[in-house]
Each structure stands twice: as C-alpha cells, then as structure tokens.
View 1 (tube, rainbow, N blue to C red):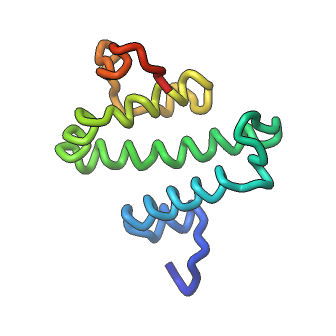
View 2 (tube, helix red, strand yellow):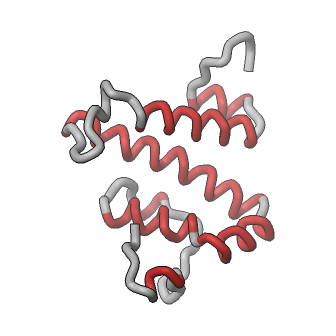
Amino acid sequence: MAGTQACCCVCCLLQCPAIDYTRHTLDGAACLLNSNKYFPSRVSIKESSVGKLGSVCRRIYRIFSHAYFHHRQIFDKYENETFLCHRFTRFVMKYNLMSKDNLIVPIMEDETNPNEAEGENDA
C-alpha cells in the first residue's frame, strides 16, 4: 500500500498480498460491526445497516475461498477441526446474506459439526 493505512477493497485486490488483504478485511469487519453508528444495539439491527452485513460476509468469504484454492492442506486441516467455513456458509445461507452462486467452496451437506449432534445451535 502506498503511504497510508487506509485501504479500499479494490486497492487490496490489485496491490496487496493476500495476508494484508486478509488483515485489512478482518480489521474492517471488526470496526464496522463494532460501530455504534451502524450497529448501536446488540439486540436488533437497523434496516439501513442490514446491507452492510452482506458486503462484510462477501469479503470474509473471499478469505475462505483463497485459503481453499491456494492453501488446501492447511484449509482442510483447520476446517476439519473447527468447521469454521462450514458454519460461516450456513450462517450466510440462513440469513440470505450472500447469493448461493457466490458460495464456491464445496461444503459437504452430509458433514455435521460434532457440536450440532449434541444439540447446540448451528450459527
């Protein structure tokens, strides 16, 4: 990045290494989700802020897809332990935060999270 810590997605996609894009994306998502302007309540979401969730989810999902397609062994090892991508994918599908066409990381439907088998919530 040239000269500033501020970053937009286009600049990151074109110029930043993947690790920097990941860090910027997660930092930006945390800042947005903790913003009192867009999310003043932890119980309800303003209608004007709902659209921001889809954008954040798409950006975070890019991290999963990069890991899957470029670091498959590490992705599989971590996913088998945490089911993080699986749970995130179910979350965005449940709340219709992303188009199904954009969900490109294969998630086996018959895989179950061990915690779900014990009756815990799925998102």
